[in-house]
Image (cartoon, rainbow, N blue to C red; front, side, top):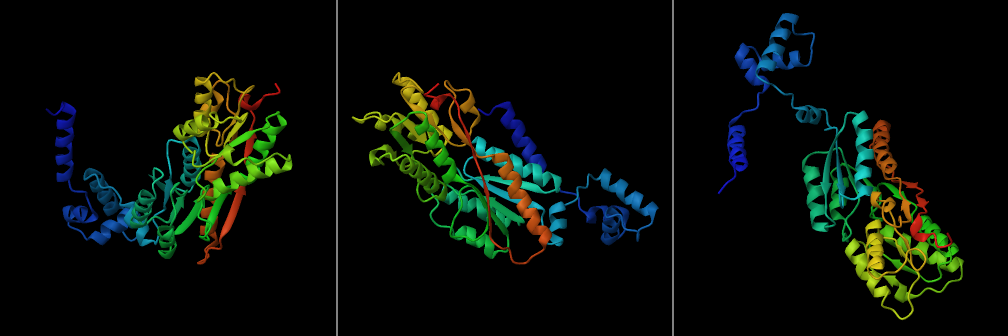
Length: 358
């Protein structure tokens, strides 16, 4: 049995399908004038006298005429539209990047089309192909976690569409890129934990096919080397990049004979949240018995108990930087884009989960 809402929706859909969009030819037919005269009047041309122009504008309003800006922009060789592909819209980092892009593009009267890959390489390819078919002027992307082939991104370049990568990037593609200094940020985070008195620090790492997770692991290893601390392979857990995987990795670590006294969830704050939840379940005191550090500065990290030490990637600023980089290239009017990498230094946000000395 259909609900009343469903019935109304079906009626509305049938109604809308039956409605024809008003064109300049409809206006011309109604007034018995040429379509070119209508077009000139709508574009405020001086070749149409004021009386005719007013009549055309009045008729256009009566017929509910809407200008097809996409078609107009295509005739000018651009759509003033940027496509954005992110792994997950519901993560604070990516939503903030989108907000930063939108703030910059709004000022330039550009539109955004936002796509979500859901960490699926196959869906990412479909998103990119859809944006190509929409004739966007630029595609901004942070690749999915299981990306291993980037022919679809090479296709973007082959189509003459601007491509800007951010955060998770394909190193082999020479494009404009906006990234964080992930290695240095991780180095500072682990050094902080060591200085707080933690001596056995475990690492939850992300898929090593992605550059950002390789860099974060390198920062972790460099910090251990600086303080002459041993690198213990059993303390490094692969692919723990979600809350569930973070919790699973934590249970594995806490089942060892020699337990870690701190965990650096280099993949995300969601992974760090999984660590905290397991610690609470096992009545392990944070930070006195177990230190926890995450990555990304998700909003919830400030309200957990204790609050979670993390790394702020300045995501809104990153989004603005991405958009402004595109506009700078547009203003240069160069036919060949010179690959460029802009690196943004993250900031360690020290909170309760690692303040062992306090």
